[in-house]
Image (tube, rainbow, N blue to C red; front, side, top):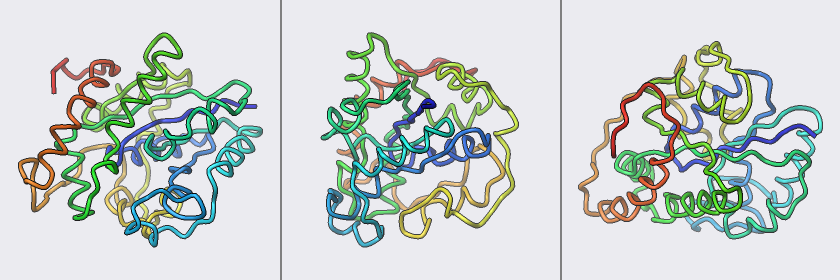
Length: 256
């Protein structure tokens, strides 16, 4: 069985752009938030009720593990996903499943002052636990305790400001060769290969892109908005905790 590399992110952390890099490489079977399908809909759905109609799926969580294990029989596997989809069943669903060669875990973080504003722009009825920061930290700490060392962490700002250095550092940390050519691609209006939610409406800018970089993010609210300021305040300690462990690129070592 080939290795399975999982990038655990939070929503709106540029994780699908990272996934696009992995798809452009062409040497991994890539999964786009596979645990999101049973989390949003189907017999084991846990998402807020107002989200469930956007995802037509009947997958169960065990089905996702079977799909990933089957894919890993033929090729290395990359998956990007969100810890809040699976943390409540982590011990049995992932750690409890024998995977020859195992799963390699890494993390992508983003400043909540950017991430939560972006989510609130898309979802005016945003529920705090959909932002994922507390769950991301809990999973990170559990893996640190289990392995005796922190898993690789990259920051979303590093990813778009210094893409080659950041991807190079992550590749080295997870043990795959660096392929600079994977950082550029042709634009395409299709989002079907990397989106199952709401017809791909979250990824229209990525579809039009030709590589990693900052995109226009102009919203009608900001981090001081009363509906989200408290969410951001509660999320910041979790973000800073992982930020202290991030892989350094050529970006200055600053404190968020």
